[in-house]
Image 1: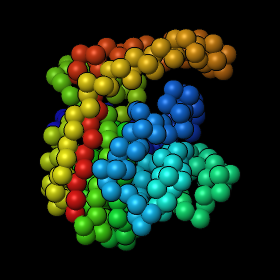
Image 2 (image 1 turned 90 degrees about the horizontal axis):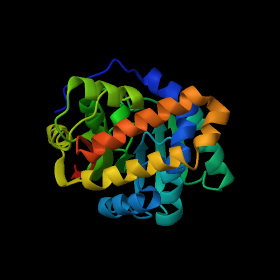
Image 3 (image 1 turned 90 degrees about the vertical axis):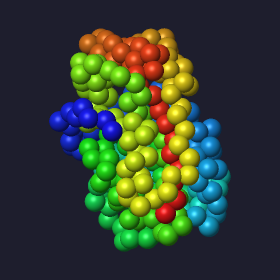
Image 4 (image 1 turned 30 degrees about the horizontal axis):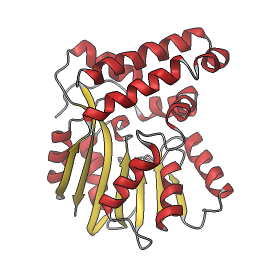
Length: 264
């Protein structure tokens, strides 16, 4: 399991997503704010067996892009849990504007202390966001607790996928405001320890570098002037430098992405 850990709190992450960080990632990834947008949401939904009978918990639901997509296309009920006030407010605003408030409920709260009774949800779900969580073991235990018996845990996340120096780990995590990244095997072990059975674990690292290169291209070309105009040249330089760092690390297979499906 990943050993390096930064002193990052839930407050630091909320600060990023309350401000320029949330806007930047939506620019690069769209309102779903995860790698692969709708196509990846479909893959995960199919693997999780989402239907219109499903009550799904989206842990770290951000702007509610996946929640709305799932409610629209699969007819399921979704509860979104997020700790950032701006994300929660904006998710509610967009969901109301799309007429989906009857299917989706957002809760402002902490993934490490979920405000739900045990055995509430058919599916507990996450997409590329749990890298921000300070205690992955506690997170998975909470996911397992709120799942119904026979329920499914389905998530993707950014991962530590190869050997790195302490300096590399610090630089990569500091730019993204990650406390630490888990490994795919680490997540599988935590899932089993929480009493769930891993059904599938898939290393998506080979494709990850292509996506990161795409984000760097967008920053350097499509959004360069907008970032400079709105946030200044210093901010642009920091963003370009940070994503270049991630591009290089992903190309070398040191950081990546994975998908895990488990059943209670």
